[in-house]
Length: 306
Image (cartoon, rainbow, N blue to C red; front, side, top):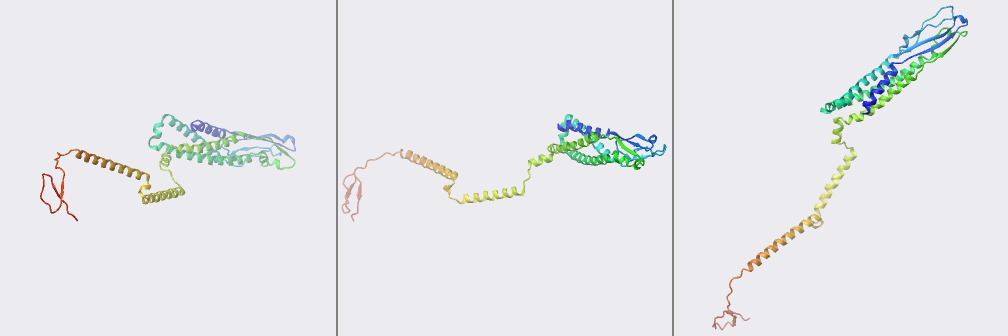
């Protein structure tokens, strides 16, 4: 939302303050002969700052003779580059605004839209930085070239001690200074938007799904795995009863075994309850080995005397 609102506005302010600039300076030449003086020499210059094409005609203080003087410097490349970046960034930000609002589904489809937007955002951030630095340097040179004291050095009549030359009007640079400031503001805006556009790409989502780990983290993870495996090996060699879970399972197995034994005892008791009919055989009679004659119907038990 920040890019949608501020990027077009700041881009317009950048190229409007630079591309729409026009300034002038004014100098005066007082000759020894007052009738030959020129008290208002105006020098006009504007964007794209091809100063070598700007000329003026001061007096020579020799009758009515004048000379044609051209200023020095051509700073059109830096100024035009800055304005071009601002215009293209303004158009792209408008296009991106339309896509964000009306074509959000197509923008996210196939991850192609976020990738293109990410590349263009990085490119514009870089171009804003380069163009702003270049224009700031060119503006400094323009200020030096259009300084009235430097312009007076170009006039032949001002080199004579008998004549007096001075500046009556200096150019105003506030508008061009503002254009440089807007250039760096645009750079900060586009550079800050790189992170938000990157979060929409598949690269960020892939990184979130498979996070990259540093070498120290990988070493710590490997050490923890080795410690876990060593602890598992030590636990497997300990007594069976030292492990609470195994002891609990063993107790459960013993309990189940007791239950089975109880069931078997119950079965034996049920089998014992099925008694066969008993026959009374009477009291046994103990006799010695020599006496083998049975007496009565009682059974005979032989006992060997030792």
